[in-house]
Length: 427
Ligand code: GDP
Ligand code: IMO
Ligand code: MG
Image (cartoon, rainbow, N blue to C red; front, side, top):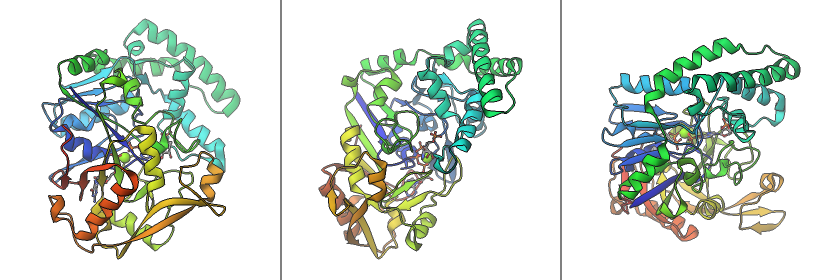
């Protein structure tokens, strides 16, 4: 049995899609366990670039089974668009199963997301406006609609009516906008149900069956540890649980089944959306990294905020996600720099904090303690083994290992499948 959880160790967009795709070649099953189409995972194979939002990145291998787990909130319209897109690209999606326990994103969730952001004004979170927060809120309020309910026409009618009544009160009386038409949404969503029904299953049964047969499973995280609802930089977080522990809940497996946690981390840090960011570079250097790293959101196209690698944050992610080993991505983006900095501590009112603070007021005031490393000033994009890396690049990697106590198993030096250096095989 081999079950590996892959988790984002920063604020998302660490390159999880690329690393998942790379590892999926050897995996028998790849499972997405949290989030929704707020995720944007880019996979580059040869001269083709695939952008996935809901479907696991393992889908590009014909033999790999893929699962959208119960922990997700699914916008069926986006799912169908993604299925059509893959089909048009000649990718077989017949190996995909969708959990009947996953929740459905409805049009009112998307409208509510936009409305809530507007009402927050200057305190907006910078959400992807895909309805994620309101869909998870309804799930917690126990009024959500699950895929299993969507497939049951009578049940769906009852639940949708109930929801439309409640939401129309909210929209017309509180937000002062138009409400939603029950019939229209009912018909539209029945169409989606028809389209996906054959893929829907009690996926926990399949996943555990695979585990029992000793197959290799990869749990593909979305977002990043610092965007976790409980453990991230609340309230500037998503509404689900990107941490590794959530793989168990979001897939329906026991924690004793997980063998390893791999944390995907960029060789620097990025963030989309609002919230404090201690190592953020608001100068020319930040601009240079954004340009070289093509740091623009896969989902929303927004420019990503860029900063130095933050080891206070990585050590925090190690602790709360139980990361054993790192996949260090985008090392090539630093190829041209004379000096590369790493944050090893936070200075707060004259005191050095070694642990990532909980209070956002404190975090916002933290000054990063930076060490300087000499750059390697060499193109790394064609390098295929650790030994071939320039000495200063190796020193950079060794410093990360030394200061985090984590291994580095994979180093990515470009978006392509072959631009991946394997130090330790995970499967
Ligand atoms: P995810 O959300 O964690 O899957 O990451 P995204 O796909 O949103 O963003 C990562 C971006 O960096 C994508 O455009 C990838 O193609 C690209 N990428 C991944 N690894 C590397 C790398 O090692 N070097 C470079 N230059 N680009 C990379
Ligand atoms: P992947 O899987 C980066 C951010 C949003 C916003 C906050 C809340 O590609 O790494 P939401 O729409 O979830 O309510 O937005 O979370 N966010 C992400 N940032 N990568 C992601 O996914 C993200 N998913 C959500 O920008 O700040
Ligand atoms: Mg992304």
